[in-house]
Length: 99
Image (cartoon, rainbow, N blue to C red; front, side):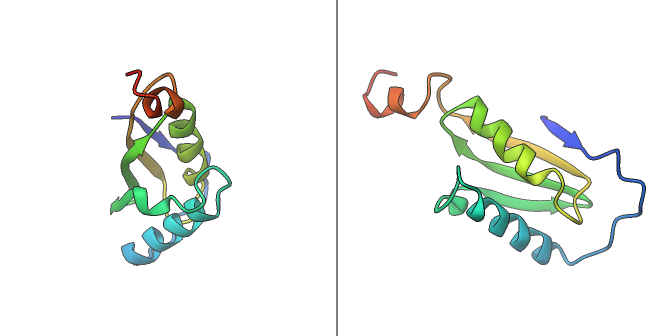
């Protein structure tokens, strides 16, 4: 498991409907410059106050960018980043059939 928790938060987390937290996570990813038009490629679920993210990205860098974008989302204490990295060499490596 690759989880990051926001332990710096001192206030209690507000209880929200899971669907609302997931909708905001999708909107945040869709608005991010690295993921615009690609939010549908990720699957979000909520397990208590942990946001679980699944999907695939071409690099470890983008996996970390995604995790950092989501870690301060209101209603989420932890992000369980289950996103798979397709290639450590990036998308162009895969696109050229070099894998």
